[in-house]
Amino acid sequence: MKIHAITTGTVRITQNWRVGHGAYPLRLMRTLTDRRLTEPLPIWCYAIEHPEGLIVIDTGIPANANDPILFPPHMPLVQRAAPFQINGESDEIGPQLRANGLSPADVRWVVLTHLHQDHEGGLRHFPKAEFLVSRTEWNAAQGLKGRLAGYLNFRWPKNFKPMLVDFDKPDNLFQGRYNVTRAGDVYLVPTPGHSPGHLSVVVEEENHALFFAGDASYSQDLLIADALDGVGSDARQQHDSHRRILDFARQTPTVYLPSHEWEAKQRLNQREVITLLDKVSFLP
Image (cartoon, rainbow, N blue to C red; front, side, top):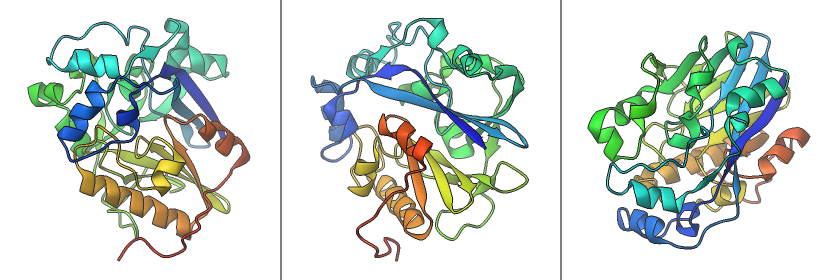
């Protein structure tokens, strides 16, 4: 399988967004009021040329990602805490795929790790694809409640009706899985915490696995440190997901590929797996 790492611009986030401090909701308040921004971080989307069809993981941001959003009332704080940098429509996921010799119209599946704005911003580029979203995430993002939680559901295409994923197949580490391909070499696992229905994508390759982690953590080091981010409301779930991912990496050589770490592309190209010093299982 040939796999492309594509970034649709960059984002800077507050230091307290990248690594959260304190209990929620105080942790969120510290995130939104922090004035210290990171260096620009990538917004990785991935395209997988699979024998069963072209798969895209996440869709990045649109060219108008920084347009003011006045409702809910805290959204201006969110936008100040996470400003985007994108050089027009040519940086969106559709043109970026074409620049890599791929057609958005040929995409069979678009997997959304979650529905935050920097992952669902390119939905309109995929008129023929089947979208996959966890049922829990979809339910959390609906209506006024979803809008208050920061989901920009008002800008989704009116015909956006994804396949809702229930993790109904057993898995010995995660709380179920969902096979995308008939071959079973591309599957989804629940990794909640950053958002209620966050999922990750596992791609099996010969003697290792690629783990497309979305925002399960912002970097590999933060995963290993089991650090909370500043916006995930459920600390217990986030810690649990980290431990399951690390236990997966302990059992299976794993290339860890989050959405906002520059080093992820190098790890993908070199198939560089996580090296864990602690070989003790994280699960009971």
